[in-house]
Image (tube, rainbow, N blue to C red):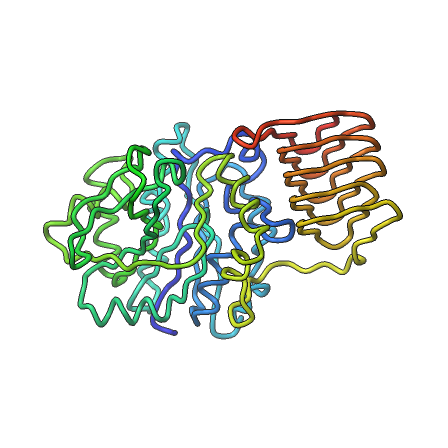
Length: 372
């Protein structure tokens, strides 16, 4: 697909993942022990044949994301024909309410104007799903719509997908309205922050959005222009997670420990690209017990681990029990420790004989590089 510009949109300021977000932007979060959230949208674009990709950044901590993404080679983007660009705002704004996607696009409007692609495909960096955008673009063109919006139909909107937008559609999947999910109703169409439209229309809308309000988001102008434009929904099927808060991050990792669910996201014909390392395989020492767990390479396991995600280079010493946890890379769990329903950030150390247990409804968090 050579006629579409891929845009990975920044997360809105209203989306907060307490603790973890202090150290990196949401799309740079570690996921399933070896990926970053940004790997999913960029891999989707790359696998769909889109070779010009822009990743927008509004975070105050972009270093981790920039280091991981690099020049895009890890995503199989052809460096001769294609390009992956990190797009930054020209100036920081004191209040988060001004750090919108519209501001980021306006700050980089001259670059968007010079792109030769006819269409834009905008997809978020804080959601996890698999999508063939080549097929989606063809469906959009065949429909004759001005804008196509990707959505996921769920019966769990009362307990999940808080802070996501929902779509109200008519029987022909025509757009009626867009609202924040308040959790009142279980069955909703969750908007996946994914749009398809022409590049010219996209530029017109972001200029109009600025005139509408200084804190407008693209969703606001889409809603405002719905009477003038033909906007339609396209349903997504398969695994879908929106990392809109800490519990959503924890749950997404836990859900993918079910191999039936994981197999719907990870398939041989649709690789999810990320950085690889040359570290040694996992070492399971005498006395180790590991059940229903994803363990990345470079780990040393002596204790008992169940229903958990273990990142690269983690050490879990003898006598320790780790259950329903996400242990990020290069952390160290001492001897005779009990951890349950906890996210341990990178390079943290939990010393011998500690017991840290939280409930599944309110998982705990140990900060990056902390010593407990």
